[in-house]
Amino acid sequence: MREDYDVCVFDTTFRTNKYNLVCAPFVGVNNHWSNVMFACAFIADEKTTTFVWLLEAFLESMGGKAPITIFTDQDQGMANAIEQVFPNTRHRLCLWHLRKNAVSRSESTNHAIGFKGNKSTTLTEFFHIFGATVDRWRYQEGQNEFDCGNALPKSDFPMVGLIKHAESVYTLTLFRDFEKEFKYAMGCISTIDYMNGNFLGYKVQHESWPEHTAKYVAFDPSVNSIACTCKNFEESGWLCFHAIRVLHIHSIINIPEQYICKRWTKFAKSEVWKKMEQKEDNRIEKRKITPWRYEMVLRDAFTNAFDSIIKVLEAEKAAENESAQKAAEDVAPPSSSSSSSNAPLESHQPLPQITVQNPPQVKTKGRSKRTR
Ligand SMILES: [Zn+2]
Image (cartoon, rainbow, N blue to C red; front, side, top):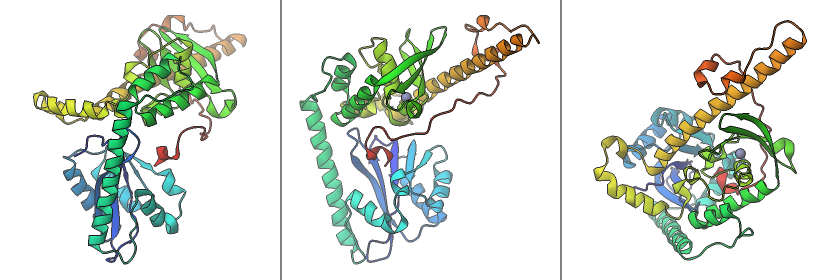
C-alpha cells in the first residue's frame, strides 16, 4: 500500500467496455504532483449500496485508512456512500468534472488517466491497458525522483533566501509552484492591520487585483508562526503569496520548518521509509497515522488557534468602534480594551459574531491540476 494517500480522486468512467460495466479508478498524486493508481474496480451500477460495497472493499485494501480528502464528481449515490464509509474524510467536488457535461465526461476521464477503452474492449484488453498506464506512471515517478536527486532548478531569484531554501527541499514541480507564489508576493501591498502581544496582523493584496486578492495574515515573529485567511497552506500544503510576502518583509530567509510539508519534498519517499522502519517501535496509536496525516492534525490545531485569535481581534476592534461611537453620543464611557491584549482567549467570551468578508476567488496562479 502506498503511503502518499492523503488525497484521492475517485470517479466513474462510463461503460467503456464490452460488459457494460462502470469503471471506477482511485487515483492519487505523488510528491511530484503526478498521478498514482491506488485501485481500480468495475461495478454494475451507480447506486449508493454498490458504492458502499466498493468503498468498504477499498478501505480494507488500504489497511483501514481513509483518505483525508476525496475529490469526486457530482454523483449523489457516490456522495451518500462516502458520507457513510468515510465519515471523517473531506469530500470535495472536482472542478474539472464540474466543467464537463455528462456526455463528454467518460471520454475526458478516460483520456486524462490514459484508458482508451470502448464498448468493444474485453476485460483482458482492459487489463493490458490498465497495466501499461500504471507502468507508465511508475516509470515517470522514477524519472522524477532521479531528476530531483540530480539537478537543482534554475530560478529567476537566485539570491533570495526563501527561494534557495525552496530549491533545496521541494521537488522540481512543487518548487515551481512556490516560485510562482513568490513572484505574486513581490507584487503585493501589505499594510499592518493590528498588533496584539506577539501577533502582527497584515492585510495583504496584490497591487494589480487588490479587491480580489485581499487576505489577512497573522504572524508571530517570535516563533515564525504564520496563518492566512486564504487557507492555501491548509488546503495545498505550501505557503501562499500573502504569507510569503509577510515572511519576506520580516527578512525570513528560510521557510519555517512547520510550513514545509514533507509530502511535497524530495525526501517524501525516504521519510515514508524511515517512518515505516520505525513502525515496529512505535506505539499502536502512532501506527494509525501516516506522516502527512500527522502533519495535517498538527496544522489543523494550529490554524484553529489562529482563527480564534483573528476572531477575537476582530471582535475587539468592533467593540472599540462601538465604544467610540457610544462615547461620541455621550451615552456611556468607552470600555477599556488595553488590558485584554495579554489575557487568555477565554476571557473574551462571549464574542460578538464578526464576519470577515472574503473577496471572490479568482484564478491568478497555479495549474489546473490543483483542482483535479
Ligand atoms: Zn493567503
